[in-house]
Length: 629
Ligand code: DMJ
Image (tube, rainbow, N blue to C red; front, side, top):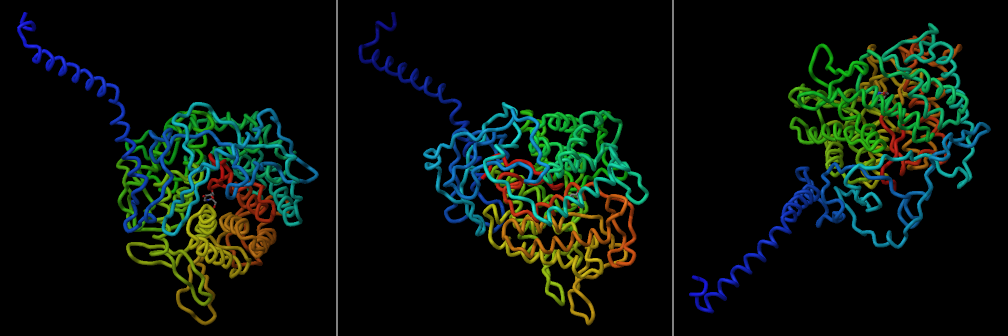
C-alpha cells in the first residue's frame, strides 16, 4: 500500500539501490578468497625478495623469478615436487641423461628391477625457450634460472620412483683406471676383514679379529652398500643385500643416536634404493624413518639426540636436555627425501620446522651458530663459542645442500649459508706461518684460537659446490686455499696422515712448520673430509694435483693403517711412522665415505654420480636433486 503511495521517481531510486546492493553482495561473496590469497602471496613475495642479512642487498633491482600461480601457497619451504624430466640440451650445465650405473669393468652390475627404470620424458624445447631469463644476484653470486625455478606441486600426492637407472647403453662407460683399481683392492681388503670377523655387526675390530656394537644394526654393512654399487662389486653387494633382506631388523629395544642413524642408515638405504632401484631398500628406509620420528616429540620440536627404535621413546643424553646443533640440522636431506619418496609429508615437516626455527634464533654471530640447542626452550645454549668443526660442521654443509636438493628455491637456506660464510671470513679465517696457509680457526668468547679440526676439511668441497651452483667465485678461491691447507695437514706430518686436530702457528719460529699437534689430538680415525673435498675440487677444476694428493693419502692409509689379516684400523699416533699405535677399530665411514670419495676422485667420468643431479649427504650417500640442473 505504502509502495503505491510513493512517486515514480522515489520507486525508481529504491529499486536502483536494491539492485546496486545485490550486485555488490555477489561481487564481495565471489571474491572472498581472493583478498586472503593475495595477502598470502604478498607476504611470501616479501619474504622472498627482502634480504634478511643486515647490509646485504640484492642486486638492484633484485630480479627474482616471478612466483608462478601454482606456487602461490608455498612458503620458503615448499612442499615437494615430483622430479622433472632432464634438462634440454640448450640449457646450461646438465648433461642430457641420468648417469647412475656402475663403472665399466669385467664385473658389471645389472640392476635388478629393470621395470622400475625411469625413461627420459620427451623434452619440450619450445616450452623451455619461454622460461624466464632472469638471474638472482646475491653478493656477487649469480644464479642462472634453470629448471630449479619451476614451482613444485602444492601437495605431496604420488610417491616418487628411484632416480636410478637409465639406459646403461646410452653412453660408452668410462673404463676404470689403475688408481680406481687400487681403491677397489683397498675396499675388498677392508670388506674381507669385516666379513670374516664382524659380519652383520656395527664395526670391525681388525686387530682383535672381532667387532664392536654401537646400535647393533650392521652399521658398516649398510654404510658400505652404495659404495659397493658404485665400485661395481656385484658379488659383495648381493651378499650384503641378502643380509639386509633376511637379518636387518629395526624392531629392537635399542637406543640409537638420531643423527648418526639418519646419515648412515637412512641415508645409506635411500641412496642404495636410488642407485639400485631395489624396493627392499626403500621399505627398510621407511621402517627406520618411522622409528626415528619420536625424537621430534619435544616441547620445542627440536629433536632429542637419542631414540629407542623398538619402544618408540626418545630422550636427550643423561646429563643435559641439550641437543647438538649440527645433529639437529643435518638430518634434513634424508627426511625430506623420505617424504618425497613415500608421499608422506610428516618426515619433511618435522625437519623443516627445525630449520625454520633455527633460522629465526638469536645468538648467532654473523651467521655462525653456537654448538648446542635446548630441546625444551628451543634456544641456543653455551653461547659465544663458534667453530666449523665438531658439533657445528654439517649445519653449514646442509644449508647449502638442502638449497640445492630443493631446486635452489628456499631462500632462507641460501641466506643463512651466505651469511655464515661471511661470518667465517670475518671471524675465523687466519693465515699460518711460515707457509701462509689459510685456515679456519675457532672463536671462544671473543678470543681466536688457531685450532682446526680435520672435520673442517669438508668446507673446501662445500664451498666449491656452492660456487659450481652459481654462488660467488670468491667461494671457489677460498676453497682452493683451504684444500691446500687440508692437504698440508697430511703432508707436514711424519706418516703423511692428518691428526684429528691441528693448531696452526701464527708466528714464524725457526724449525717449526705451520702445523703443530698436541699429544691428545694425534689420532687418525680414517676420516673422509679431505678426500671428500679433493673429489669436489677435481670435479670442478680438472686439476690433476688434487688426484695426486688423494693418491698420496691412499698410499699412506695403506702403509700405516692396513691390517694384514683384513681391514684397516684407526691409529693413535700419526707422528710415529715406526709405531702409529693401531686402535683396533675400522669406522663405518671408511667404507661409506673415505674409499667412495677416493674412487670418485680418481674417476674422470663426471657422470659417475653427476653433481648436477645428486647431492651427497654428510655420510657420502648420494640423494637426487629434486629438480636436476
Ligand atoms: C661422518 O659420520 C660424517 O662425515 C659426519 O658428517 C662427520 N663425521 C664422520 C666422518 O668424519
